Length: 445
Image (cartoon, helix red, strand yellow):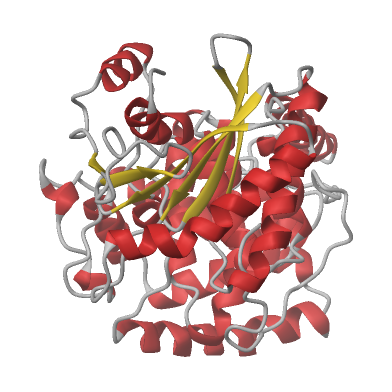
């Protein structure tokens, strides 16, 4: 990188998306300034939180780099935020200046210098380190048009994709804000009234699990059989799902609208509530590779959008499953976004925390895939020994009075017969209960 302009242009290629409302630290190694680890956090609204956030970011980047083998020789800081409707990008830059200074102090206290600190706002960038107004004027510099720089050409050659902005990626998981949300909430109320007594009083947890996975498998087949949206429809406005007027979602909004129309309110409610059970969720995580993975990802996204009103906290398993499928299929940026959202709606959701941590540490998801494949094989072997089939998930021919020895056939979803294993996190099964809206909301870390 030969200066602030190229650094600003490189940021979305380093993360895989355009960060919004974010503080990003990137490690540099060696005399050539080779890029290393990076950390990102949402910008805290209160300046009182900035000192703690700065210390945590600096320590996380430096210790994480050391854990991978080499201590950074320098750090680049990016502060990204667009102005409000009645504000200006220059005002954003000045408001964030104390945070940039605090980050420089935090990194310096760890003996790693900040070589550059940039503010990116409304298509312009400013350097907090360069005092020369000839190259860094007070009004900032205009960023290069997307796809026109040397960095963009190199990233395209290397197969690196930029998936739009962070805001656009998060919007694909956002709960409905249209009048349809009221109908979905009523369906969730009705499903909860029917399902929870079966689990808590009748002890029919296994029956509910099988029904949940069978219905999820049918919804995935329905998604697979639906015609693809017309080409060029991916940039339609998102107002149909209740987004603010003018919201534009690139790269998949037409697909999301299609999926929303394929799932009935009662079907969505049944799967959402059924996946609050940890063992059921762990079996659903076995849809993680091949053609199944993309269908599962579309289903988990669609169901996360149905977690409306007081059921927003119920999105944590769906968001975590979406993150797991993304990570398993090599899409780390989407995985981190989904895990972060899961922890935002439920900061104590341990499954999301563990997977988010593993993804951020650069671990290979294949180890977890091996574990899930072995558990599926063990259940299939147990089903065969009991006289049933080995392929799980043909729910159309099963009833809620299943026994653990019955097997199935069909489309290879994970709900096979046999004694339920503890799942990949080895946690005690738990059924989540309804929470008030916003009860667990917290900024991602």
